[in-house]
Length: 125
Image (cartoon, rainbow, N blue to C red):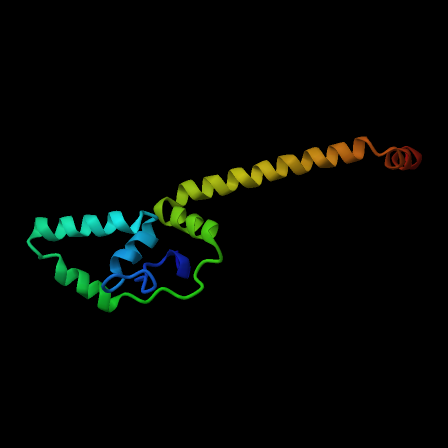
C-alpha cells in the first residue's frame, strides 16, 4: 500500500493542538471527538506518559495534502481500504460482477429485441 491515500497524516485543518488526533480520526474514520476523548483517557491512565509520543508523532508525521480526497465518498472508500483491504477488494469485486451481470442483461435484451439485427444474422447463415 504505497498510495498517498493509505498513509497516516496529521490533519492541520481540523487540529486542536498539533493535528495528531484529527489525523487518527481521518485515518480510521472514527469521529474526532471520540479520538480526542480516548486520548485524554490515555493521558490520565498513563499519568501523562503518552504525551511525549503524541508530540513526537506531531513533529514527525507529514501534513495532510490539501486535495487528498475528491469527495466524502472517496474518503470513506479509502478509510475502508485502510481498515480492511481484503473486505474492500471483495466489495469492489462484487460491484464489478454486478455491473457485468447487468451489462449482459442489456446485451441480451438488445440482441433479442432487434429484428433488423436478427434478420441480418439469419441472412448471413
